[in-house]
Length: 346
Image 1 (cartoon, helix red, strand yellow):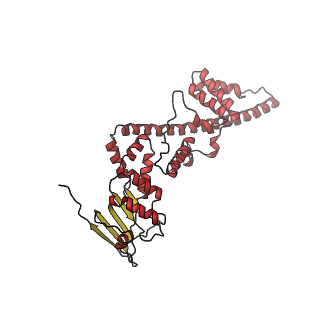
Image 2 (cartoon, helix red, strand yellow; image 1 turned 90 degrees about the vertical axis):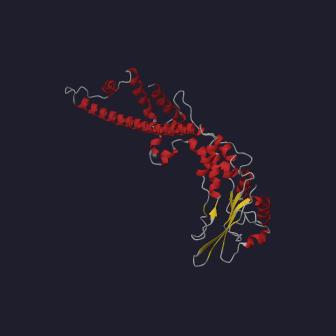
Image 3 (tube, one colour; image 1 turned 135 degrees about the vertical axis):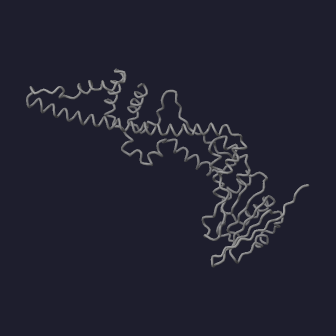
């Protein structure tokens, strides 16, 4: 009963329940995930974009329910003129120990016509009818406000249930060792996916989505960030549709482990011009080529894979796998895979 009074009182102060999400029962704390501040190694747009989305969600916990149509726009406000009478109802319940049946006394004292009397004249009966109609309208209006409040509390329960589930999941994750958590994150991140800009037969590969999946995991909480940034296998895939900042982040976070490289548009530098800028591309190759483990090149039928080595001026003997894909004009798709023996230490 005390919490119910506080809810109604907060509605009075807020001028409607649009700010009711700021109210919490005594002893309860709002559960908010901590978004780690932007680190020096992050691309500013990566961190800021994620923090902005999280900030929007925290500013209105009911947003996702409102978008689903559970709440209509007009239900975001309670008529402040009816709040005083709502407070009287709650106060009456408190005085009577919460027994709803005692509302009958309050009803009889508020609405004329009970008990019915046939001794009143026309004037008195007409006045009673008008008063009864007005009271009925008032009670319906109060009832509508309580229904809105009830709907708001239902949504609050849904949010509380969602947060409870999230808290229970955190207990499970907290008990996992970092090595196992790393494996789970690795399985959750897509290793490769077809390039959406490529035709149906070219089967180009883009690692950009896997990069952003790893970034998203690194912004879940402090522990996920530590695990993600200390797991180089989450960052060792680079494709030519990635921006220079994304490639830089992958090279830095992958440490010294071997890299998987996909050049879906080489040597058509017009498709991803920023990646194939003369100075940048040459610098990227020279600094990272000794770490390349797998190289996939997708070209037209008139382009040969030796154009890559001729243009860049490097040898590919240290690769464990070289895959060259090309598609002809009639839709025929061919893949040439070359596996290179790896040196083994005795």
